[in-house]
Length: 226
Image 1 (tube, rainbow, N blue to C red):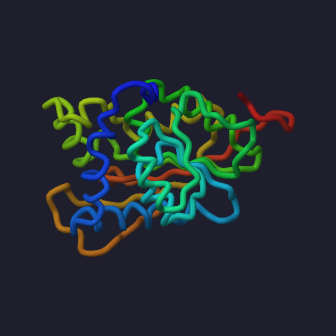
Image 2 (cartoon, rainbow, N blue to C red):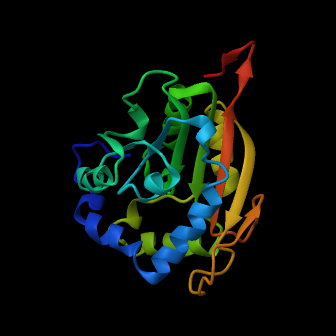
């Protein structure tokens, strides 16, 4: 993530970004992504932290109580949704080791400057028996290709993004000390198709426009692997 003092494009578009979720298409996509995440973001691993919480849409619906983000404009909206917010970056989480039972990153990994460092920080603040969950738009999906094209056209937000395949994201998580557990996929149709209802499939499907994956910490002799 960028430094909190930098000019953040999400500040200027916070209201517009949040309003998109209330549009018919935005709501349908959001509901599909939430249903994909819901089996993984469970009460068993509270308290949860969302890194890159944005306006708190996912955190509110999934019962995630804490959120961090570089954008103060986004955080103002998230706070109104009852999220305990903190302005900061994922590369330097302002929390003690083992503070959370669960850490979640949803479609924010593509915006951070150092994704492996963010994942290492997520591992640091996670309890030894906790869960880490990411939700990504795979680079090789039709949605990923659409957003990549927008980035190449200097879209004010997506020109900052670097999309990853599921395999790349899982490899980064493993390098940060995680081991993969479960995965769910949704949005198998192209970005221009109507979404009739949320449909979720277990596993990582090649055509999925959104994939949620859970991880536990690797252990060695009863200690977390850094």
